[in-house]
Image (cartoon, rainbow, N blue to C red):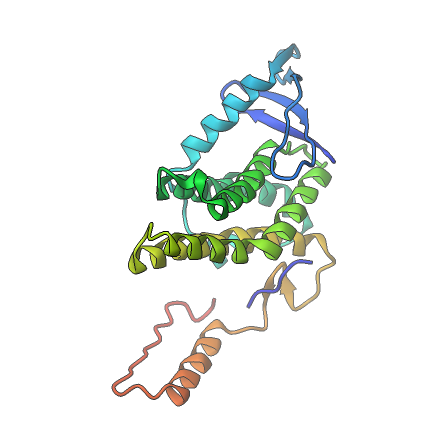
Length: 261
């Protein structure tokens, strides 16, 4: 059904006042140093506001805390198909900047809530810093109308780092939690599931953005393969499980609620 998609100046939108601030970032290993001050222009009055690095950090941490409460919705195929061409990239970028950091912030908070000693577990720190870096970059990149090059670079950066390292990093963190007896088996399963489940929605949006940047073909809308029938894929999977898994009384039922999807 889906196919995968293939230092800049980053801005921080100060949403509380309608003020925009452009802040350069460095490509340090796991941290980004904000400059001593950052100039921003009030979009209404045209005045210039100087924002210190510490003040900028306060805004970012406040957003992280507010967005880390798990209040995000499931990304559906209908949501994806509302963005069908390059003309929709601006709207999709705004959706990504709103939705994906919610998931990243929630996962960061999940790590911090796992144990008060999470900073003493190197595998948790590694996972925490990877996701926090992605949160920072998505929240700091400025969406200029008709100028999405910086945003595309951030999407590419997040995808390349997460696709290469996120799953192994989660596995290492889970192993460390098990060895240290921080979580029992059931708790650990739930802990890993939350990471992998939220990852699906994030990746769908980011892959779709990348796919729309490329030249479209008649069989695809972004990552969506229009020739694919999800119900048929599920039926084949059910048949395969029934044939190869000798489980007495196994009964798998498929309910198709929308035959046009």
